[in-house]
Length: 299
Image (cartoon, rainbow, N blue to C red; front, side, top):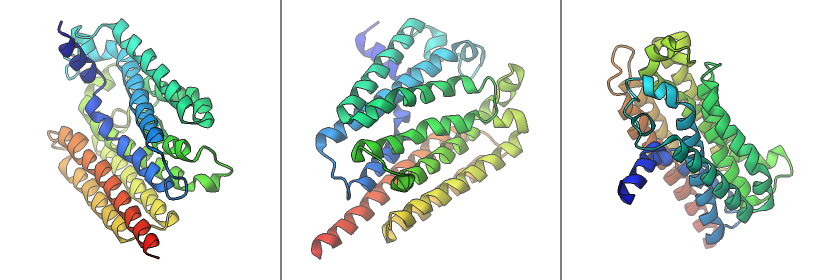
């Protein structure tokens, strides 16, 4: 196998393109912290390294943990591990290697992030087993990705004396938690029958397709609510609120695209629309903060 093909298979294994979901929220957290705690280019690079390494480690472990079910599921049976394009030992090595890179990156960022890095990895890895015993597995996935904005904030600030100091990243983390859980419920609709047949747990498998979509809609309402709290707490302006309105419309449209009687557009709702949400939110947040900074400099 050619080296380029091997790297391509590794990228497909961990769905590297899906990094676009959590990374913009982490960068938004960096931008929100920067006015009080300036960020060096070196720190920003290590934050990016930590983000990519943590996600790659978690996805590699997830694919390894689910390889038996992925081989049985017609939707996933053509993936890299079931097809033998990536060996189990390779996925395991990739998970360990990227976990070590994450810990080293956290060490280079600051002491607090280094001490918290094993806990972060434990949460990231734990998600992969939750679908075996709880329908709330979507919330555990949301929790795993909600660490991105909180971790990015701590990477910039280096400390937190009280919960009030963390109010902005906590609200942003909760928004990410429910946003991710909401669209993961939609994604899980594809495996509704399979999960029921093989004893795997999810909201659609437990409550059905219609109720699953209602759960997803409620989670996305909470996403908008917590993003609004970020804006209020950080005292952001018109650009941010306009961006939040657009994000809300995209989430609303996501629930128009996927209907109980028509699940054919799940992939579009899962990737395209949610990529617009994360990237659009980051752009609106950064633009608003740059405008505020510009006004401050004018004064």
